[in-house]
Length: 358
Ligand code: TYM
Figure (cartoon, rainbow, N blue to C red):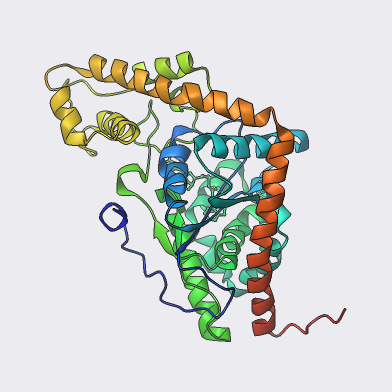
């Protein structure tokens, strides 16, 4: 399934055999999500989290809530703490199972920042300046209100991935450039200091690589959109979500056909519908032939409500039990640290840091 569905154009995973931490027979995946808003949105879920849930069955999976990435833009401390737990609750509600994957919070594993420094020193200033996410965000906020942390953010992400010797990284299309940087820097480190890191591949599913805004179907769904009208937040009232789906922008013609260029709005709805129900796009086109956009939107609104209603309930149940959440995270951090510490020790040795004598 993976070979057919994944865009593996940039994948050459496993082409380096690190002599690092002991590996099981399963390939390893790692990914992260920011706790920057109260709720994940449909793009986060379909573009990434859904794949995380599937991959825990076949891979040695490490998933984290990246609170250190979150503070690259200002955060209210109490909100950040709450949103970090809320993110973990949503990941569990989405189907992550702490028995099947390692689930942790980035700041609980100090090795991320430690390796991050080495990676930062390996990166060219010009190379970092070409990161489009940084360019977009800093253009929006102005350079005086843009932190140096936002600039070095991709290097921390590189460290996140390399610490775990990940073979593949399940993400949405917007992270592809960061994944390419990760490969470049892993290769640079290996060439400079000797084989140390696995060179990871991007695991990006074509169908859901980019979920678009419901009101502006040429832009990706994002919490920083000008208006929240086209953003499906998973924890919103189901009725509000249904309304957003029913008022999604389509086009003036009435034909239900998947055509990303000519019919971006309808195509986005078809992708979402198809992924959430497991029905092929061709089948949906046939089902709605001659029926018009209203029928498609009404049915998709129902599909969405059926999806978000139990998701919200499960999230709330996990959130109501912070002790269990914290104990899941404590175990996750312990498992993550065992791997991260070993990789970091090797990287420290390779770059020539004098070992500390205790
Ligand atoms: P973040 O928190 O912005 O997004 C989490 C995941 O959701 C995906 N995504 C989308 N996919 C499809 N369509 C969309 N409209 C959409 N919007 C978001 C993102 O691609 C991402 O996979 N830098 C990362 C977090 C990170 C990370 C890592 C990821 C930090 N370290 C190490 C992988 C490995 C980020 O900000 O994701």
